[in-house]
Length: 172
Image 1 (cartoon, rainbow, N blue to C red):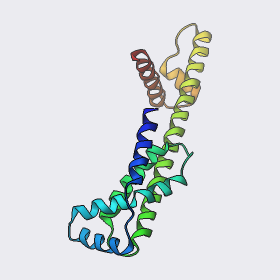
Image 2 (image 1 turned 135 degrees about the vertical axis):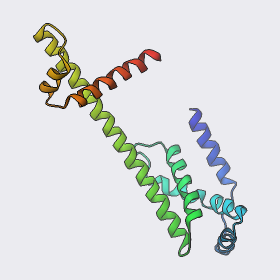
Image 3 (image 1 turned 180 degrees about the horizontal axis):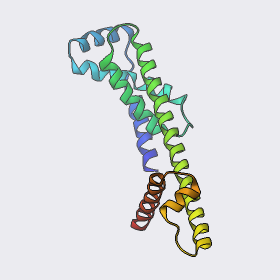
Image 4 (image 1 turned 90 degrees about the vertical axis):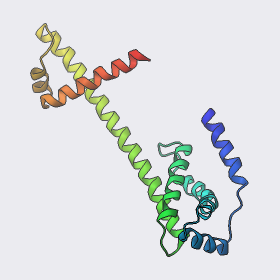
């Protein structure tokens, strides 16, 4: 809820920023080349609404709108500092779009990795329980690795993740 209030406030403040004209953009770009930081600030402010427009295409893809806006704004700032020549608007759009797509891809990879790790933990726990019942004792690392057809180091890593997760849960 608090995050949503922050976003609403951000949108309200953005309404107060006047867009700049093509002529002003040309002047600002020349001042930026000369190292005028106030020109950089105005270029950023003048393009924040562009970030919002680009973010709309990426909504609902696993990252909150607020985080997408943050990613887009960082990309905007970097793009303004890296721009050399050519079509400024097209350059910004390309850089912001690439950053947004990369952020979503990174989030998807993280989600997939989490799911894979959880699946491995669940399988290890099931097999460990099953082997304990069969053997009448806890299975050794070597026995678990053989049963799961995985290297011992991988089994050890999964066990560590399980212990770490339990420790985190116990601490909360």
